[in-house]
Image 1 (cartoon, rainbow, N blue to C red):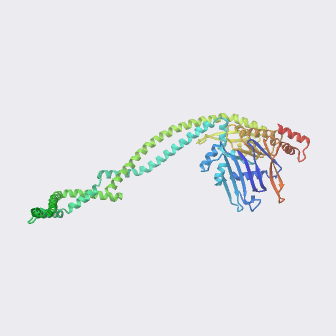
Image 2 (cartoon, one colour):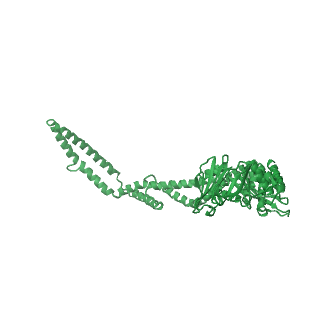
Image 3 (tube, rainbow, N blue to C red):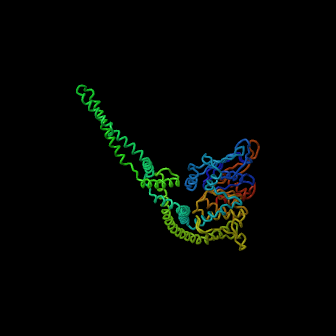
Length: 552
């Protein structure tokens, strides 16, 4: 709900404040007083573009602020969250136009783009001006109106959940199938690579070990020669090292009684002797390990050839990397099989949900079709009352593929002159007729359909008398559910307002005309409506008539 509108330095408005109430607010004033200018300023905080031509004082910026009570407006709260903006029960929307022409928009003092601003304010204000057909061009609104009248809003929401669930499953299934097709092109080659690795059947570090073993066997004669000569030097020959160390140890042993300090040296030498004997034995063991088998060497070379070939093929350098690549191929091929299972499961689920979706869509469509005759009848009755006696309203429902709103495409049709030829409403109706039709539609859906602040600009153009009175009644009834602001030239409409604003011009301190707005008190209101009836100097009859209209 709009709580307050503040306009500074805009067109012929120096500064004004409008504070409407929660029900029907009527705005009157002489032609050219500035009513449309106020709407123009309001349009700026709804996301319209602007330029410096709106500035009265070229040295100061123009500022338009709207204060809105948004408590309970869940859709607005969600849109704020989507735009990463903070929520406050009172939302202040401000638009500034600098002297340079640069325009900025703010929501609760946070800068926003015009796109975000437009999206947010569309949930706060619904502005119906002459030739403004946007709402009736919107298939969503027409669908919501029918669902609201038919109490199908809950069913429509349940269908919508099914629709998006089915859409998600269908998209996931398509993605899986696309991925499977992509993988399938590669799977044969991957299977060939895996089979080649499995056939090679390398063990951990096998290639490195084979390299080492083959290197040893290639130098086996030299290795044997070194091992044998080393062992012979230690234990064999004319003067083996072991025997010499033994002799020295025995000699030292013989002097330990007379020279005890030699004892530790003798023990160390004895220990070294045992270590050398052990080394000699180990050299013999290593000698026995050295192989000279040509067949074994050939087998090792064959394994290395296979390994090196696979190293080059897969761009790796170690057995561990080769085995890692083998594991990766196994996992990818297994994933292909798993993906097949997922596709089968998703296909089954998609079929089940689609049946549920179509059942819900058919049920929703039937509910809508049942509502159409009564809805059409009520609209035609209201059109007669609001000064369109020759107009005939109708609704056409066509079957379409499933969408977020069902399997129906709803069109509002109008035969403006009993010609028997129905056209789309936005093509058949004039601006004033369109506003009155919208008023009729919204008056029927008011109690069931959430709507923002509704602003009607001269919805009563071209009518008078009883038709204008009926428009006023519809506006008053509509305002029991939603805040309504109506700019009017009809006394019958102006008298229905719970709050009446009068727009006028008066000279400012620079003797320049400036638009002002005044909230009329009861006596002032009667006089203003009397002037709408009888001119600037209304008669007693006009004043009496005005008083009756207000009291009514």
